[in-house]
Length: 404
Image 1 (cartoon, helix red, strand yellow):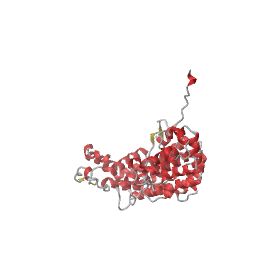
Image 2: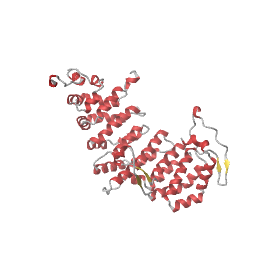
Image 3: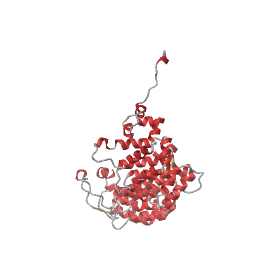
Image 4: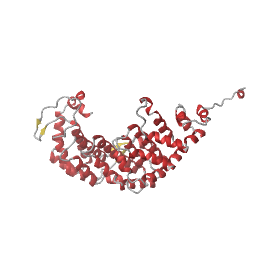
């Protein structure tokens, strides 16, 4: 009795594909198009991998939709296009990674003037990131031929998707010899030095913040990968540059110009704190597959401490006179600061603030490093006593809002 019934069902996608004049947009209107793609519906994949369809998909994720479209559907097709292109199906990966004209269209997104549309930037970054992981050699070869690639990425570093793209290049390239080639290329392009140069008073705060976060992630990823790939004898060139005294000194020079800014101090100190990390939990996110939540131990490179030591007096001075933060909006106006307080060490003019908070964290990290010359300099400056005075003067109810 069972075989009397035909239980085979034809999807609506297949019915649409029976039409001679079916369009990509019609297929993208179907709710199950992504599911059918991931299920490797052969007819659908053959349709999608046609030159004109692939070109349309790439154009959708790299070109701003018309402004006169209804807002709720304006990015509907770009979103679906991105999901199809990153569905991790070999047929699509092979077509996209092996067709230089498609890669040129994709790359053209970077050649726009800033600011980039953040949503399109995320689609672009996700698509390139997938290709870096799946079609590594083809994509790396293509990108290395583009002399201005790193410059364009840094030009748009105020968009967080560009940070993700850089981290993909550092963490998702296999095998190890190719990864080492990519790291050497990024080092030749002076990636670290250019990111350090963005942490500067003259730069937009968003660019500073993203550059700082990227450097912190590079340090952590590089250290973790060095731990996991102990069989590789070649050092990570990016980490070597970051831990060099020259880079630390350049970062500090950028942080302490004549006209200081809180954003520059905070972002620069975050990089220094990451360089000074000796223990921390296993990374989440990109390296999560390799970490099981255990703590890793690192030794602080002496060159980092040698670069910091001459500037301890500058950090001490920040505790006495922190730079002015950007004005708060009236809606979030904090309580009026306390009156200046004269101490035996100096005049405390303002409550704790973000700069002082970061300096306090750095002093704690430096003391943990237990380097005699650094500890002696901190004692000579009475920095620890000053921090204790600031802590006593600033009760939690008076600066809690500033920590956030």
